[in-house]
Length: 238
Length: 396
Image (cartoon, rainbow over all chains, first blue to last red; front, top):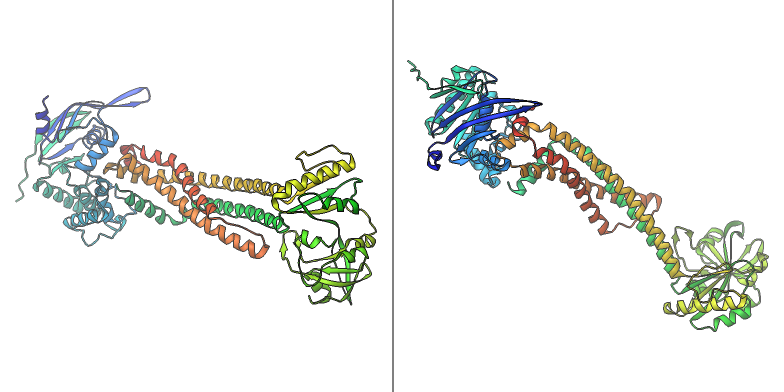
């Protein structure tokens, strides 16, 4: 595999396998996974619970290393130490979680500044950038609020602002609408779609095919294998 | 992440858990304040004792005779001619002596000696005169009175020429001692000083067992002590020639310097013991910090997971918790220092304890408290930094 082909894709996963040791037994969560994602794509990874999509997300999100196989993110091999993985996550990946994972004691401004601080920004620069990012998601007037003072949809928008603030290569959304009512859910999906239209690469992980259908490409995972990988037919809204 | 930002995060975390942080600090506060008070007490006692001893004159040598040994007038004369010796005063003392003037009576301490006594013991009279050789030779019923005793029975310090009774015998006051203040051993001003010959008659004793010898200078102390020992050994056929020990079966020769050394080393070991007690309470405080930090790590597992997911490296998490632990213990240290000062002030006012708090103790205590936080923070901080982000995010 030449270096060039690794750089062609944003994500290039080759023969990846993840094995968990459970006492004396070993459990293969994913096996023989091959996947490439290009810049600017909007991909949904879909599958029932226990299919291995969380494992796949953890590997794509550099939260975990694969047991074997190769994973190049933005041309960079991700088979490295915990600290280097943290740096990759910091610079290249923006997470949006189902339960937001905002730090409840910090204001939403501080929450959004946090990735920048880990990146080495000064307090002032980080806050300025975080503020403008919050303005973009429509929360510029709430910057002093604590996450608990906001609605679920607002919290998820804060999480999206936090994911975007470092200008990552990829936004990784794990069931981003799972804890939201349908109205806020569709708002969040709309926002992700807009972000994709602006050129951001988005990977969304969900068990819900309806939500997955918002993406341009749907990858189905079942029993640790990718069973289908297809372009979605864009629904035309009359 | 910058260190100042880590400090800010840690400070914020300490502040947002005010009550818990304070309770955690309490161990350190108690530890540090007790170290400061206890060490201060030790140092205070040390200083007081050494002040007291050096106020008696560092040129002073005490000779205590035990058993049957005596020194007569001729011996005194001979000793006085020895090199290094400036003056010798025999002394008799007795406590609980009844004194009376007019209708008022009191009990006081009696000291009796000769004319050199004022010089040897650094006594000065504020009015009147001290005992003279002729008072001693003629066994005059005269005395020098301390200011407190004078106030007790006369109600004034202006008592030169007045008549008073000591154990029922009439005396004339010839001088008033200059006030020397109060020390741990009681007032130095509550005493009367009599000619030694008169006192021997009143107390019905001829035995003099204590002699105060004044060396010509501090450098002459060793010479004077050697001559004293040689003389006493020769006179009583004792061995112990020129040995440096100050203790013997028949007599003891002690200089103030050796007394000072003994007293200082005693109080020093007391100081050390007291700081040891304080250190134990600091240790307990440190364990408290570790305990709370461990709980805090578990409680904040999800926060740690989030921080790691968005890019916090291990050392950023480690530093955050270490700084938090040392901020708690550092603030505890500062509060402990303040409490120590407060406690010292209170005990100075209410119990007249002398407490000396040195800058070194304060700085040392503060640094030690921060170190306690750092050391006891290592385990919880390391635990936090090692958390697996996936498991931490899943933690409920």
